[in-house]
Length: 605
Image (cartoon, rainbow, N blue to C red):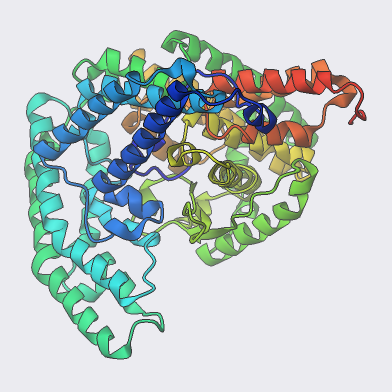
């Protein structure tokens, strides 16, 4: 998975035709006054809405490398929230007033992407998700995380961060007000998740300001910050932490423990939220970009679990393990030979593994993205409560690389056999390729370059794990077991997510189903189950997306025969940018037809 940020118009989907070729765009009919007017209106809307999304979501702007709003937070006041929702409704009205029929084929695609995004944004307003601004995986309790992507290259960068620090108490107060309203209306996260937040808040309640997570950027300065200014910046930071930030967090921690936590819901199902059944149906459709029902997804999951178990039995036999599959799982979870002893050793191994993958990429791609990536540890204050790894995209302007974040907490529960599949998914050729190629799309609006559909992006990440076979990286049977374990992980999601949110499954039942079918450690399993509880529907997209991409690969190979080139197919999947599965299928169908039409060219193996 990639690390979620406030996305606004960047999270989009469409049910449009495949991307037109450059030649087709160049050959389009002469411009007409109607087309010119519609095109101008469309792109003006794109530009204005992008600017609005950056202005209203300063944190997202920072994540994107846009420094203009680095001195502020999002306004979470009721008036600002209502204004943003009204802005979405007005933007949709403006879009619908544009005559789509006269647009070029490429602009029709952009129009459809934007329309779907706005329609979904407006549709989900009724669920009032903003009343749940805190989860066990993120919120006001770790607001300093944004420093991971802030530049801190000049004195102004530090002053911007100080301005944000001074404004933090207002953001905490606004968050508190939203939580109060959520509690009053029954719109709360499950208590079993919120109990974790209490411990996360402790990291903010420091007596020494220099030990605050907010102070970390002031521990060192680049040469561009004059030495004469450094002491003053440090002194101001310590004062703000001591007099504003820590007292605000103490008030919030008391409110959270004494008032909010006892009023959170005991149930775990999204169906138990206000209008919860409709909400879960919505998020399942939204994340998978399909019309599959919860029952259909559940059955797909059960079928995949059975298939992958059979493959695991083969690996167990290959390594000569005598015992049941459950005993083999326990062996994989507990034998010391499968684990590094220290966080430092684990980080070194992750970085070495990434370097092993890099030179093999040319076997399965013709196009390698220009943006580099690095490997970083997940921050210590969130590592115990988050997943094994995640990817953070680079800046759109190329000023910041992409980063593969790995969890070093308790290395004794981070097995070596999972590291290959995990790295293929989160770094290359998984999320880094998908995001970097999207940013390099030529001549498209900004929201298309950074757009993200979970079914496409996570489906690609899971598909990328299997590309390790094509690159010759699964020569160790335990690494192959790791790939199957990760495939099983995503198949189990289909069963437990629908089970908990629509079929009345308990948290314990979901944990045990996961443990029965996967060698992942209990630490990971519990964190994963809690993630599905707190983020309904999102986890469904991975396997659904992978199955579609794999189906399209099989179709292309079957229909093209010896003319099928895996490198060209993989490039074709990524050249769409992030799109829903229906749009991807149309694009690949057109790609297949284009390859068929090139009969005079040389055949490819």
